[in-house]
Image 1 (cartoon, rainbow, N blue to C red):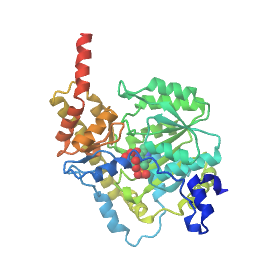
Image 2: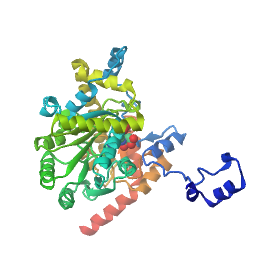
Image 3: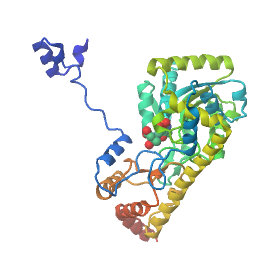
Image 4: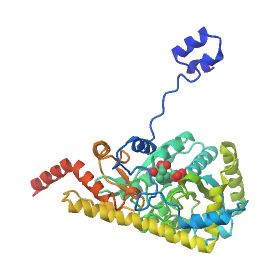
Length: 427
Ligand code: PLA
């Protein structure tokens, strides 16, 4: 059976030797394509330059470019010694999504499980979708986080895209988005970023979310929210969950993936939660048991330390309010760097419009830089970002913002010339 997977050389080899060690079991395995985000970190690490800047992965850094351990996490560490069992992490996470006084929480209508961070929560959901809606598709915004494609592909759910970002106006293409929602077959699965859309930093307004939710009712679509940046758009956890709360008010059944990688700085701990809103507690119990079974076969159970940290922070009122303050500090620092980057580009006399840097929200700035300009930034200035021109604003600091602005100004010079010529023609 395996014969047909072997290369010709491997077949020859397996005929001419008797030792099973020489059979070409893996000769047909070619290297996987580089991951668009992790590949940036690899290139950055390989660069010996002292001036290098990593604006690739969305990992929070302080204004000196150092990774941050939040004070609430340090205090939780001291408290968890001796704790053993986890009961409240999921319950508290669900309250962050739907609101602490929400009926959903009181009625036990949410099937929540711990997950291996946001990625694991998406993966569990994709698998659950395949098992119980095997004929379905998933609609992603165009563009979306690159790993969404891998996750649903591995779960064998075909993907489609819906219009989201308009590169000309560098804002939401709301009319096209609504058309796609209307034209999708009834009862389709859609993935949304509830706040701080990755990679564009462009979110629908409250009014637009209401229209989307209304149209979802008409079409009977299922909304799945991937909430990886709660708090990073506005600095306020409830405000960043507003999209989900609107869908809740309209009585949708909802799926949600949560990650504490960014909001609590717990990247390495892989703490997340998947919740699916159900019609009643009986359905929630059934769905929870199915997701737990999927997780059991995939990885058994998640590592416990990070979950204890999250649970301790969320269930201790003092630690929780400290966390809320620290989320705001992180969001504000990023926002200030947006302003400084834009001001610096303007001070340099760039004739391009950089308003979108401050209009966009959250961890990322979708700069509009071309792949060629991104390559030049890496080769000539040792500045690394993803090929689509996404800048992780968390990597921008008081110390490097000038250097970054100068470099962007340099690599966009020819575009500035074109803009000037076009401007003079139209005048
Ligand atoms: N969903 C979205 C929209 C994300 O941007 C990310 C992380 C995740 C889920 C997964 O988060 P996790 O670490 O909790 O599993 N995106 C990062 C990191 C920050 C990455 O790609 O691994 C990014 O740079 O896009």
